[in-house]
Length: 95
Image 1 (cartoon, rainbow, N blue to C red):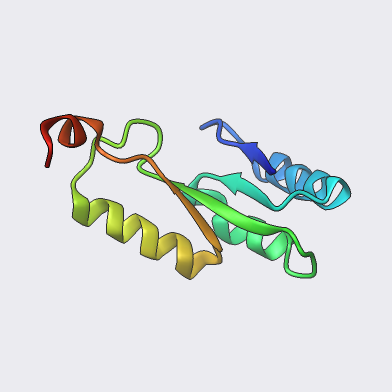
Image 2 (cartoon, helix red, strand yellow):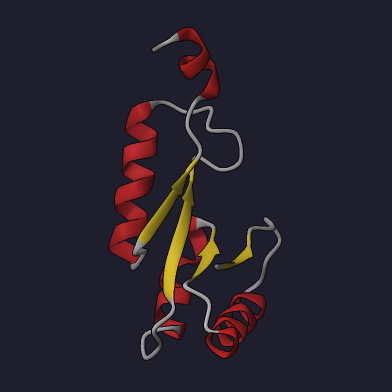
């Protein structure tokens, strides 16, 4: 189970509270936007809870190179899991 905060107006204090709650609830991950991956990883460094980052969120309407760079940045920041929104139009077109 993930403990998630993906609101664009999320603050550092809210991310820290999310991480504390995840530790108490013993969730598998906290799921956050890329901006907060490193902060969440720092908060959880002594915990079994890992960080999941959303990539391409919320629409997935970006080029492959952008998705790859966002993924690499999230992993570099400490994400152990990636939740990627793929370009649905490409999927519908069979690309």
